[in-house]
Amino acid sequence: MALTDISSSSAARACGRASSPLSTLTLGSEFERRGSVVLVPRNKALLEEGDPADYVFKVVAGALRTVRFLPDGRRHIANFLLPGDLFGYEDAAFHVHGVEAASDATVIRYPRQLFDDIIRRDAGVARQFLALVCGQLASTQDRLLLLGRKSATERLASFLLALAERMRGNGSQDKELDLPMSRSDIADYLGLTVETVSRTLTHLRSTHVIELPSVAHVVLRQRRTLNELSACAA
Amino acid sequence: MALTDISSSSAARACGRASSPLSTLTLGSEFERRGSVVLVPRNKALLEEGDPADYVFKVVAGALRTVRFLPDGRRHIANFLLPGDLFGYEDAAFHVHGVEAASDATVIRYPRQLFDDIIRRDAGVARQFLALVCGQLASTQDRLLLLGRKSATERLASFLLALAERMRGNGSQDKELDLPMSRSDIADYLGLTVETVSRTLTHLRSTHVIELPSVAHVVLRQRRTLNELSACAA
DNA sequence: CGGAGTATTGAAACCTATCAACAATTGTGG
DNA sequence: CCACAATTGTTGATAGGTTTCAATACTCCG
Picture (tube, chains in turn brown, green, cyan, red):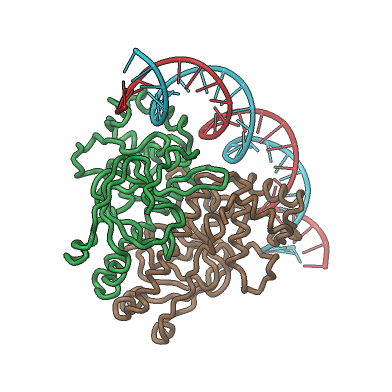
């Protein structure tokens, strides 16, 4: 496990599914006991593409991103990992995505072997886990629709609503949310450029749909409008 | 189950993962016995968005598409289902995607209840199934990258290579493949328009990377070039 | 043969990307 | 604590890839 610095490298439905309800799995006290805390400073990598999948992780604090690169350097972010999320179990033997801290993050690391054992031993947990993976699949399919067919404004609207949903209970108010990632992260997550993300947020602000008290703080002023803009069925 | 006519409605890695290795599950003879054959004519719906998820299906022949619509009618295709593929298990109680025949198709329908029972009873099958869903998740993530960061040419190149991979063994030669779906289906699958798909294929033909002996028949003339064009890591 | 659906091709428009400059923020060392 | 450098975010002008609109071919069937 590397913790490499990557900052130097150049680099609820169709729109609102809570994106990753990864926190519902109860794996027992033996499992919990064998976890070790790992601190990941912002923009450091916890895992790199191709690393062996020897551990399973749970986010305690902060936010991480799962990244992948095209040969020419284009970057794509498959998901953001927030407190409560479990990750590292998806891939077979090697990770397909790198995992980096989008903000200073704390995760707990568990031996993959132990995780697999529990899944194998306890059918109830296995079923829960299956449901969890199916949920992941569903929210990934939501993002397919977003990337395949939505405009920049629709993408940002969907993103803000989904993030607000995921953040609920994490301290922030219902209509307020802190963005734990950079504009560049948002861009690579939504298949846009930094400039387009910035312009689109500015536009949402100038039409009073949202407020931006600070760069990382968003207030959803007109949730209704945001919902319409998200081009969501629900 | 509707079989509605929808033709009237307005409507291996980062690039080459075999997209849906859904055929590796062996569910036993009792299961097989309780399946009933369903014929789905081209452009008829087998399932609609929101239908109860009471059955699990397996494709025997032909090809189907899983579709979803935005409120204004934009269509998105999440996946193509080919012979051997299992589907209908992903969603909780109701289907999130409609399923329609892209070409005349034959599927076998199994009671969902029975499927769930087997998964619950047989841990070995449950584990196989989990692996299957994880594979689905991985190939869906590949498509995220494609839709989020690839150009039209890269998308078509990736698509042709992945389809050729999936089709292997289905009778066709190594370098030849039949497209069991329309240009419009391909467009909605790749997040493009029909016109762009057509133009891009024409361009690939005029550069001798592929041949198009007929509308639905493709010969991969320069697999190497196609691989480079697909912007794939491997 | 004719007609509907499907595919191709062309011209123009549009949205987003790219290139570039500047502003704001963060971090660091004096 | 301030000053400077580096990073990050915003804004503007232009370019470019896809979409849109439109017309023409092709294909399959009755």
